[in-house]
Length: 285
Ligand code: NAP
Image 1: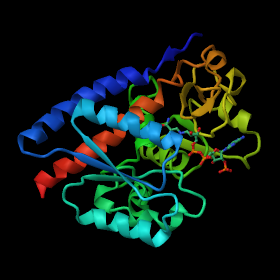
Image 2: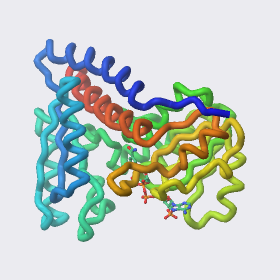
Image 3: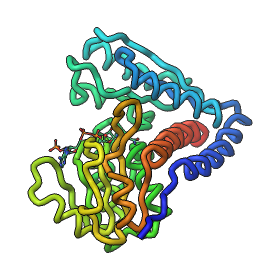
Image 4: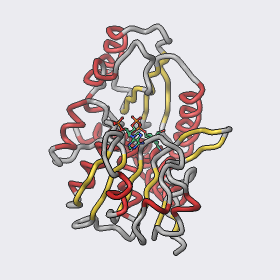
């Protein structure tokens, strides 16, 4: 079997066009959607991320600005800064760039991200809404991107499918599991303490991998015809590697996302979609 490629770049372009129509309509009413990225000191990966977001924003009509509070910023200062953005009417979306420096824990800060501008679903209130399957305006970007890709795969609808998620982080594994559960899939979440992972993965119709271990999953882990979504991104020798050994897995899977060019490009558009949705809400209130 040679798997069909689930092309994230093509999907991102398609979604981008839809967003541009929405930002054009907002511009006619004098509103420019505005994303504020809050950083606690710059590093190479956050600067690369920022460049990507700025370039995407310029294409679709979303302003991206940055508040860099510096490496030494303490919890109280960061919290106060985030809380103040709630009443800044010029800002529609707020994200806190992660990972944070070691002296800061996201657990002490997440609830300070303004709930109604929380475009990456960081605030525990928005995470809780996902758990209740009541829906939230702000599905976190990467889990949202995984679902956008699955919607266009042969695995959709997920109702009754066996879906396995490798990884249980609060930014990817756990929310993606909740979203798939809300689509009536049967979910297994595995992690570093799970026994017989490979056997469990081999039983699944849909395999979502977010473990941060480059090329850990190969064809021997997969049921013939499985749909494979690779969220992993690790830079090795200047190249981006996924958690799935693509060349091996494609011989068994029916559909698969590449890295790069799979989940990543859709993630950025999913985040911008939330910013545009937040700006549109200004008109509705
Ligand atoms: P994380 O917080 O480090 O979580 C990794 C998860 O994988 C943990 O739950 C961990 O288990 C599990 N795990 C690690 N090694 C394992 C093993 N050998 N067997 C089974 N489970 C294992 O990472 P993350 O933030 O979720 O990110 C995961 C990957 O996705 C990274 O490569 C990251 O760069 C990438 N990512 C990509 C995007 C994108 O847009 N494409 C966005 C976000 C993240 P424990 O909980 O037991 O430790």
